[in-house]
Image (spheres, rainbow, N blue to C red):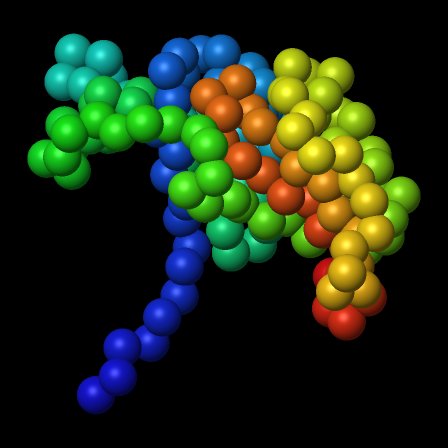
Length: 141
């Protein structure tokens, strides 16, 4: 029987949990569900609602590696990006500007893309790569 796939949580390993919570909550305006666990057993994690069925989790990088029983890896770069879709080109610009005002770096400003959409990139304080996308072929949500 095939597995029913459903990605609902993206967990980012971060260098400084407090700084990252402030970036995502105050800087980008994501609603914080809460900070759970405790530092004593290295279990503190923050959860944000991204939309009605997606959660962004922030976990201290070393603790995430320890929890998964893997070696801490390199952060940032182009190993992957997180894509956020918005309803217009103006919204792409607004989200990118909001991220920049919150301290994000902008490796690629918004522009028209060869595939017919419009997007730009920012990196959060831990260099995780985000692409903010307007795609005319996606329905507005």
